[in-house]
Amino acid sequence: MRIKNILLILLLPYLVACVTVSDRQPDNVKASAINVQLGMGYMRQNNMEQANAKLTKALRQDPDSASAHNAYAILQERLLQNDKAEEHYRRATELDQDNSEAANNYGAFLCRNKREAESEEYFLKALENPLYKTPEYAYTNAALCLIRIDQQDRAKGYLSKALAVRSNFSTALIAMARINYDEQDFSKAKLYVDRYHLVAKPTAGSLWLAIRIELEIDSNRDVDELAQQLETNFSDSDEYKSWLKIQ
Image (tube, rainbow, N blue to C red; front, top):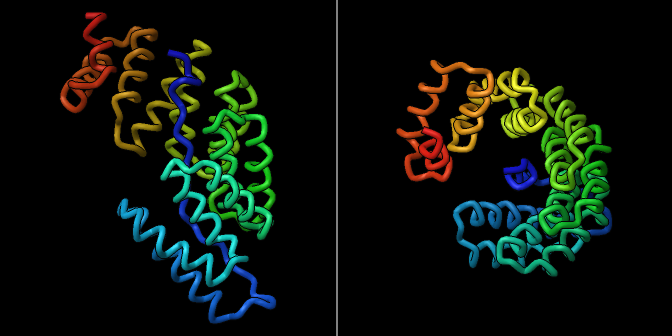
């Protein structure tokens, strides 16, 4: 299976940027920020009705809050209301040029909707802010999106930058492992998948990738151990079924 068909998960950190109060009413700004936090909390609990109530109220209290628009856009995307989601993602990025979370999320939204060429602009916009707390998200998202359009070389550049910022960022590590496996650089692929397993809980996909790498390197001892983990923890997975087919 090609890597672009595997790496489809883009990250949406629920972070609220600071707001600048100009002619907006301070009490309304504060109340809106509180409702944004409450709304995102309800989203994490999958209580979409309450999340919608709180975020709608936040927008009513402060229509110029980039954070409120960003959170409401996330909610609308989860509710499969993509037109509304795009409207509010775009509005969030217009209202606050320094809201890196909103720019990253809009880029991820565009990529998920097969608008890869447009998405890179917003990942780069997120990275323009020197105060962005989690640039590894935008670098990795840009890479994952480029992989979908067969631009692995450029993707590796972004992944290297993500890992320079945060060397144990698991999403970037497993993406690097998969790219190097596809490029038949099995030694490098092993280094990255091993690093991934040091910082993240193994998944069926990561174990199956590690098994295939070890088979190429011809390390039977490691294969047996990895296969045992795959059977023990993911016996119903497609990856385990693929392993059984080659026995």
